[in-house]
Length: 136
Length: 484
Image (cartoon, rainbow over all chains, first blue to last red; front, side):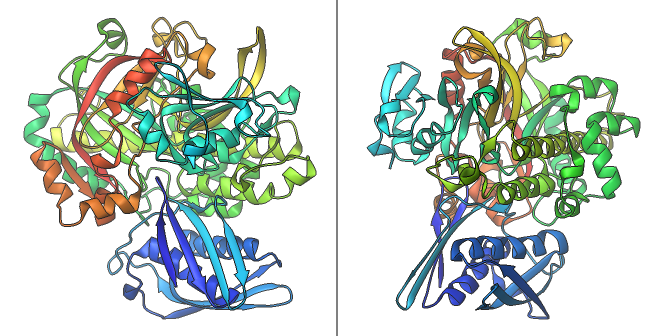
C-alpha cells in the first residue's frame, strides 16, 4: 500500500507493507502512479526483468526505482504490476506493462528523478515502510 | 521543523539563523525575507535546509536564501552557497538540482497589446500544437550522440552554424551560451538517450512558454537600454536541460555516494552529497554539469526558434519584421567558479545557485557589452495569473549574495494542496475570465501550477529590490500560456 504525501515543490511516496519485497513492489507502483495517474489505462502486455546489486535496503529501493524510471525515460515503458524477490546478490524483479502510446495514455507528471532527500527504508517485525520523494 | 530554529531579524529584509543554532554549522544562515514573507517560512521546512547547507566544507560568508525560498530536496529552492576550493570547498550536485541550467529567456517583439489581443487564442493554440510540451513529448529534431557531444561542447554557437541561432542571439545568452570547461565525454549513454529528442521541448512541471505584455515600467533608463516599453508584447520561455540534465545529476549523485566517507565529510542530509571542487569527483561533476548547462541553453534557443516560427505563421510576417529579438537568457540552477571578494580578499568561489539567478551590477565584465553600463538583465517568472518581472543586477548583489538574486515567486502550496484547492473548479476558465488564455497537456498541469500555489511575485521582487540585490525595471502580465 502506498500514499502520496505533501512536499512543497515535488511529490513524496510513503509505502507500508508486510515485507521488504512487497514494499519495493508498492514503491514501484507509486512511481508509475505519479507518472501515469491512473494505472488502469496501462495494459499488462510486456514483462521485463530487472536486477539490482547490493544489500542495503535503502539503496536497493533507490537503485530499483532509478532503473524503472530510466525504462520509462529511455524506452517509454509504463509498468503496472511488479514482483520483487531479494537474493543473495541484491534484488530481482519482473515488471509488467506496455510501451507508452500517446493516442491511448494520458500522463500526469514528468518525474525528473528519484531524490535521496528523505529516502528511507525501515524494517520491523512483519512490517516494512519506505519513503522517497520524486523531483517534478 | 523550522519552528525549532531561531530566526533573528537583522533588518527589514534579512533574517539570520545563527551558526550556533546547530553544532556543525560552519557559517550563519541568511534568508532575505520581509515581515510579509516570514510567516510562510515558519510553515515550511526550507529554513532547516538553509541550516543544513551551512555544514558544507569550505562554505564562505553564509548559507544564503532568496525570498522565493521553499522546501526543496537537500538544498532549499532559492538557495545560494559559495565555497572556496582552496579551503577544501565542495561542489554538491544537489546545490544545482536535477534540472541543470533550468532558466529563462525573454524575447521582445514590436507588437502591441492591440496587435496581439485579437489573435491571442489562435496564437496560444498554435503554440501548443507546434511546440512539444508535456510529459513524453519528444521534439522533431533528434540528435545523435556525436551531435549532442558537439552541441554540449560548443553551446548555442553550434546551433548558429546550423542556421538555428543568430550572432545576436548568441551574444544575449549568459556566457554567450557556452560555459567553458564542459566535458561531454563524461555524460553517460543513458543521459544522451534521454536527451536525444528533447532539445527544443518545454517539458512539464513549472516549465512554460508565456505571451506577456509590459504592464508597467519602473525604471525608464534601464528599460530603454533593455529595449522594453509599456504595452509591448514579449515572450517568456522557462525550461532547462530536460532528461539529459536530470540524468547527469542522477549519475553524479550515484558516483558521489561514497565521496563523503572518502573525504571525511559529515552531512545532515544524504541529498547534500558532495566532493571537494578540486577532487577527481568534483571536477568530473563540474565538467558534465557544464555540458548539460550548454544543452539547456540550446534547448531554450530551439524553443525560441519555434516560437518565432509560430509568430510568423499567426502574424504573417518574418520574425525579424516582428522585432523578435532576444533580450537575455539566464540560468537559475547552476554552479560556477567566479571571482568574489570575501573578507577583503578576492578569490575564486564555487557559487551554487539553486533556484537563484545571477544578478551582476553595472560595469561587471561578464555582462554583454550592450547592457554593461546599466547592469545584467534578470528575468523573474511569477505565476500564470499575476505577473513576471524584468530586473537589473543591483549595486549590493556582489557584497551580499555572490552577485545573486531570486528566481521566481516561489511555491507556497504543495502540489497535493493545490490539486485539492482546484477540486470542483475550472482553472482554465478562471484564467480566461482574468484575461489569460491557458493551454495544458495534462489536467494536473494547470491545477498544480495555479496562481494560488505561488507567493505574490510583487512581494518577492520588492524584497530583493530593497535589499539591493536586483532592481525593478519592468513588470509584465500574462496574456497566454502553454504548460505541460
